[in-house]
Amino acid sequence: MPKLKTYFNWSSGKDSALALYYLLRDKKYSVEHLITSINSHHNRVSMHGLRRELLQQQNEALGIPYSTIELPEEPTMAEYEVTMKEAVLQLQHNGFAYAAFGDIFLEDLKVYREQQLAPFNIQGVFPLWRRNTRELLSEFIDLKFKAILVCVNAVVLDESFTGRIINRDFIDNLPPGVDPCGENGEFHTFCYDGPIFKEPVQFEVGEKIYREYKAPENVDDKNLAPKSKVGFYFCDLLPVKDSV
Image (cartoon, rainbow, N blue to C red):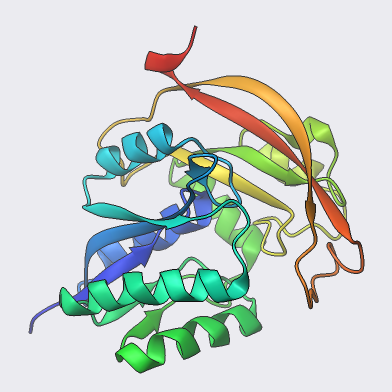
């Protein structure tokens, strides 16, 4: 029986890496493309703040064809949806009927993704859905994956978490109420090594900075609402070839 041709919505972080690991071991699916949203103004992965060069090196280490969705500096929801639909339409034309995500338990987000895919007759695949996030992170570590925190929500975590490596101590040091996988937007990571990589992605830790952004409209996330602005700490990772 032919495998199901699937593309993966790749964030560059740990949840994507673990979800991709499961899909690559699942004989039902054939993951043949990775797609990532990029902030074209800053040349970085949306939300994560990861440099484009490191995303490219990561994708090459995974050995799967990839492309990017180019977004403006502060896209409106309408601009985001138009750009996404253009990308999904192209993937549909290329024969993809399944789209994979690393989501774990945000029901509204899952429903939104499925609604956006429905007009294209593309089915969502969620390998981590409803898994216990503490157990998932422990499994991530046990499988020898490696990841570093590149973005931290300042509302729930202090600056010291920026640039931390995911390990047992990290799990033990998380404050009460913070999801171990950061599923409520508490933090984002860059996964640079593990069983799905041909080789580790080399980088050096650069500057750590703080930025504030206008809070999204109609936010239900307890870690963001009801603030007019939300602050994040970022850890800039430098490709080794570009570092001083």
